[in-house]
Length: 174
Image 1: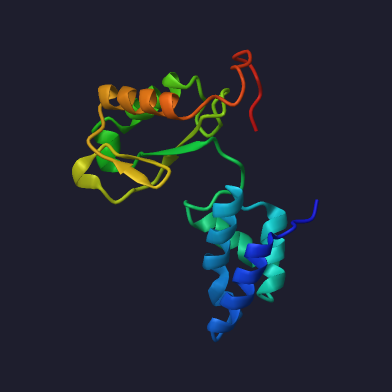
Image 2: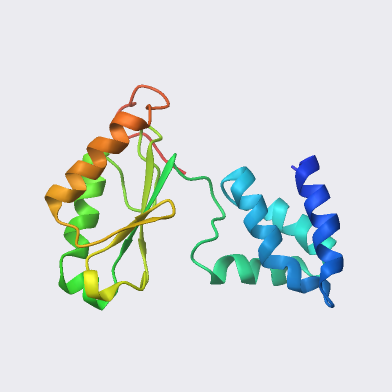
């Protein structure tokens, strides 16, 4: 299915591209705009971006897959990224991740059955001195313990309604 850009995206792109001596320099700004609107950047959206910037679709895909903050698939209402690089790993990052997964009955890299969260590992979140850390959407949480993770999960459960009643545990995720 072809990507249909929103009117705000069209207007943004039309104003943005002429600001740069080379069209391709606008790529990250446009990708951020699409991700804010859509929650992720589909292959069809990447093709649309490529056409706007006179690039091949693979050149856009290289950018999307290189940077960990771009997503190619939909995520839950809250996107949790747990750092697993050395400092975090040595200080309990894997236990922190397991706690998030258990609290939402989720599998790593998948959206929870209630649609509230997607939990993934991240490479260095640049806060080694306060390991273990995790990002929930754009907010960094430091010095995490299982108790602190429980508090964060309780807050998410209180603030973010479940999409549907949780289906059977063996439901397939995308």
